[in-house]
Length: 309
Ligand code: R5P
Image (cartoon, rainbow, N blue to C red):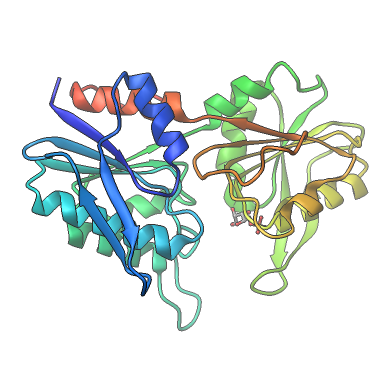
């Protein structure tokens, strides 16, 4: 086994703690503070010289704050002569900006450029928004999937008549993976963008009449996509028995209000990003700590990650 250390930034220390516990190690000690002007200061309190260093930091909201902190962290490790720096981003912020639409940046690529420039050697991601994010890096990227963990958690509760629903064409591959694991058919919603923040479901492709539905997505941000999809399924005469699953439960703004309706039975998310609610009875949080711990274990023993998720 290689000599390694696991550090956490401030984005999701609970997840990092759970991963460390599974690995039977203590987290590396570090001091992270903010100067009065808002600049971040990272001070490693433990030597990382010639070690394999894992830094767990989802670039979840506030995205820019967590991203800059991660960059500072990596810079500190590189200057302290770490042998290899593995950035563990269970949530990859800016992932949705993966192509140009007019005079825009491709921010997912810009983030990759920054991470490489400061000295990241390897990346570990969980369900990035699109697989092509890997292509923005000229270094090894391992993408894990939380679909297996979410399916295991939901399987005993889903009614027999359940169909798996992709909220748009971009999520068909993920929905197909859920459907294969759960042995259910797939339905696809066709979505049109009304504005930068608003979408509208125009067609339900497949029969949902009198079926329970499991809506799946990579993330729930403001809850707009899921709420709109729930409404479309109900209008297509689905049973008022809708389940929702997403890897990244950002649950910002009005998400809770939008999804708190009696037809939405349960909402399953993981802890890739720190979940802002602990008091929402319909919300089930599945930890990705076992997945990340297994990946790190295989990493430090030079094992394959191929069959992990
Ligand atoms: C879109 O392409 C994504 O896969 C999600 O459907 C979307 O980002 C979720 O955002 P919100 O919850 O704000 O609708």
